[in-house]
Image (cartoon, rainbow, N blue to C red; front, side):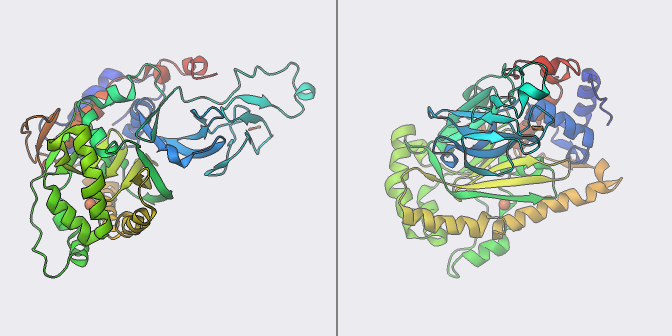
Length: 449
Ligand code: FES
Ligand SMILES: [Fe+2]
């Protein structure tokens, strides 16, 4: 596929993409995981205008705390301000483009570019320039040459999301019918979520969509991919695992995920795999609160996996929150935080964090299974034939469940992933005018403050 640089031939691109990705037929061309031009379009038409997870706000509890994150391949610094609000701006100096911050997180009063010393405050405003009165003929316009602010930030259930598109709908609107499922994953108790410990970061030689689509839809891999890990974790006298008919959801905005419907058996499984304390907390604290907030039917539904479009993954049972950060068409960086309800007992968090590391840390026994699959899908795409192969995504059809909004059905189903690709197609086929109108328009856009 050829996508010209500069002004994009939108009609031509849309037509070609529709041949590669056919959600209605459940057919996906393998090149969407490896084509460098599609990847560039994803950066400008998806990552530069979707709501993206920046970090849990517990990562920056105090004024001056900062955390360096990514929006697509754009590095941004997220900082707690003196008044308690949060600001985020590009980690790029407006002089010659150096990094404002080489650290990953910490606390500071300002950011001094290490190249020539331009200095910015914690909101990204340029505050001083070394020898300015000597080396420039007039004082620099501070407002014009400050760091580029992320114009939209919202915090939901303790998670900070950012969006570059000033005209995009708000975060909750962008969830569409998935808003309730977002709340059932992240808003189970009043106080929201906080991270336990820091963030795991690792790289995987696979396209970011392989992780995103799996978290959107795929319970089907579980018994095959994770059979060894399941055997290792399951007591000998336990009944054999079989396919579980939970439920999946998706929305027109491309979000998706799954639920188990038997909370008692889930509590038993939790006791077996993560200890009695975790199971007791779920039955005595978490579920009564969920019931009160969302009703009995929803309290019986335990979230298992989810992906909020495009790149925020979560496994509630394992308490692992993911950001799938693109690093080229054939590589991603996975950032993973371990999350708990704010105010959970320390012993519980400590015990469950160990289990999360063992199962879904970078070397976790389940994580390794998933990673091996994604790499196996990616590796052949260097080949001229493999990358021209059509892949099947036809499993499962929607079924309605009373009281469940959006499109729902039984797992294992791939219609949530088909919806993910409908949304992907829609965004990729629509120009991002702020970036594509002309090579120079962007320079004077209102992001520059
Ligand atoms: S590049 Fe930052 S001060 Fe020169
Ligand atoms: Fe898995």
